[in-house]
Length: 111
Image (cartoon, rainbow, N blue to C red):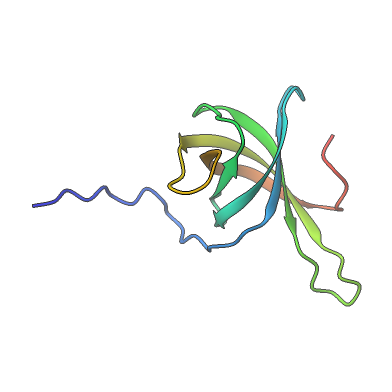
């Protein structure tokens, strides 16, 4: 019999590639990335550097515009890294993040 690990996620993930910017809480680190999938609870992204589980970041998730003027929105959130792994394809590191809180921002970059 094969042991299959239990699914840890409580919400279904949508396979969606969105640009994200991860900023450390002290402002020392700022990394551009993109999501592989996302839900209301968290997302998985590919980053050029490894982050340790437990680290917290301020993150801007950019959503494309669907209005007539094509303006997008930014979801500004605080996340905690839950896991880091090496993706099967490509370079960088896979980062699983849990969203702890969020709000819709006006589109300007986080301070």
